[in-house]
Image (cartoon, rainbow, N blue to C red; front, side):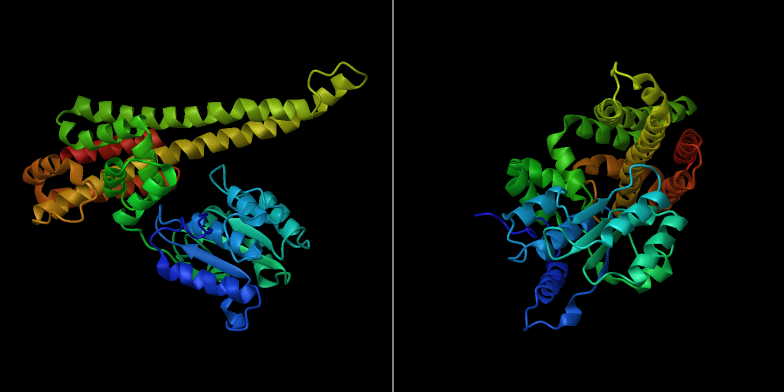
Length: 393
């Protein structure tokens, strides 16, 4: 039997209940107050909590005549990101530009084509530039009656979402799903064997996508092992720079792999669309006129590669922060709810070496490194400085 669209919103029963009630109100159910549905929603929660998954499921249920059956054309296309009336904004660069936001807002003002709603789903709304945020605000303040805005962000903090946009949205807070719920969906949805699913769920820190990658990708497992081995290996100045270089190289390699899969295909498609290879009259002039368009695509691809590299580096820093968090817990005698239970012997050795206080100083260093990179400090400088602090304590 086909699962409905909310089946993969893992470990969020309260949030799903709110969304189902809103869908019922949107479909005119007389048993539900109309106020249960509103035109703007803000999905918040830590990375991996499923913000965009919940938002996309909500969009599908709003478009579906059966409130999210999971198998009709509205559900299938909305969940696949191809529904004519559901527009998804996913930042490929470091920010969402005002030009992109204005174009989306203009399209959202049109009447729906196939469903009852025009829906704009903005993933990583915390990446909206100030100008893009202002463009969105105008639409959220005076939305068309048939338009719904779904924003996803880590929190309601002003650094993530402007206060004015936040005040015009209904906030739906998601939590980190428990490992048992993550393991269940890995087995059910992805066909992963239960033992592997249990292990991946236990070390993923509540991040569903991370758990799936660890369960299915040997390279991801090897990368995690290298990162978690760093604290024990930082015994000399040479090791400091060696691990810094390795961390940066891994992030670059991941970004390059993603870019190679997408960039050449995108560039070839654009050149074909612009008439590349044509021999007729005007072909040379058309090629000259298209050079600016090609350069614009190349700039966007470069920005996307930078973001992909920084995201990969941030995942590594999250793993490191989880290690030192566990060391603090072990130093105080806790053995339950560890982020990395499979490396307990290493945690105990680290706790014996520098204790809770030393682990806390190192954890602060990791968090400060993440912040520095977010504020555009050159990654090499930030990571090398971090490794020195981890070595010296």
